[in-house]
Length: 537
Image (cartoon, rainbow, N blue to C red; front, side, top):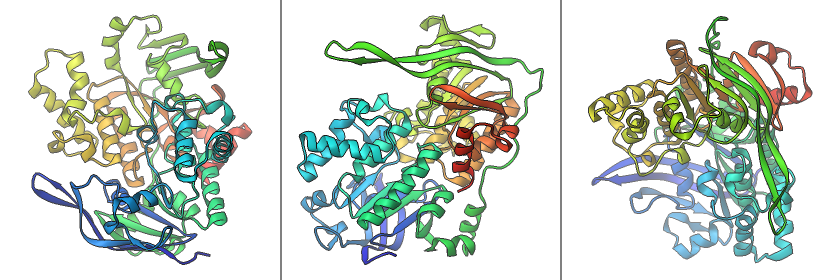
């Protein structure tokens, strides 16, 4: 049961000024959020969801961004206020206290120079005056609630020492620290594995019941909308095309776009490699152990076994899917195979031993080994244009390549991933999250590699574009006989793309086999729990 009205957005418009011209990103949007209610804002990348959410706390890039019209009435603490007209002093009281926000990309939101304890403690100190042991107890309580294992050992950790999912959980803990009236959650579970995702959603609902907190929940995952939201608003091209109670909208969608969105899901069968296809990647007894240093002298007192004795083989035209909870070692495994981090064990790529190869000798081999990272915000340089980003590897591998030839290759790569080649001279910040991930895929494909590590490549994409990217990756794989190592917590995408699957837990393989067989008859309890959380919500 929801309570009194907390937020009223009326005819909100947002425009961005560039080169003397205005571009309308949000066009006369109206909605309400009540206390204790969750409103889900759903739509494809670039539809205006995040811009709308950032307007609620005036965090857009002003004055380049401006509001041609509309109002945002917030009726929480410290009292009724029109956000668009509020003074900066009033906004400081509201931000992080009455209204908190969880951003989509934790690596750009967490300070890389400060420990987790310091970052959460700063919020408690600023808004609640907590310090010392009281602050520490509250920090541990928050980390426990969001599912951080052994939180005391993580207090002194820096963001780069945590997995993507762990970083996002820290962000959620920070946002919940002051028990806000309104939590704006911008894709808050994108980086989380499905089992933790379920726990986080349950946690948010529990906190909502306890505190009466309202949520504006931005997501492209319609399964999450069904699970957590009371009402849903569907956005397309800056406008809300349909809104209402979740069950009503999902059971009887009226707008064609809503109907298409509900029908979108990765489909098709994974490419099946020929039994005699050449082996592209072979790994034997691969280990990555990170030292644990304690005490004043920082002596090594143990090791975190991130990857502990993995064996795998990938043939040309085959996709090996790697699934498991955050922190299970999936990304570490991919980075170790590409020699981006140190490891022990045998690694052969295209018949060559890459484990003992020096940095200089390794460089020409990297053309055949590419990676698409999980975080397009952190992996694309904000100082380089799209053309420069995609062509960077080309110029390194082919020093004599002309700029004209490079732009031709860039144009083809952008076209292949569904982006307009005419936009190649724009910069990453001018694209949505999903568009940035497509740029990252284009950068990898421009070098015509033989082996690609795909680390959550669809996690930032809305469902309709997810399906398109899966089709694209499958098409490229068949055409170029590519070998993929596909890392994901989205098992629907894994099932559509992977011919073979490995399930990882705590750095080890707990189960593996042909994808169809594994999805039909998982043998271990861990795999059954993982699949149930992902496929049956």
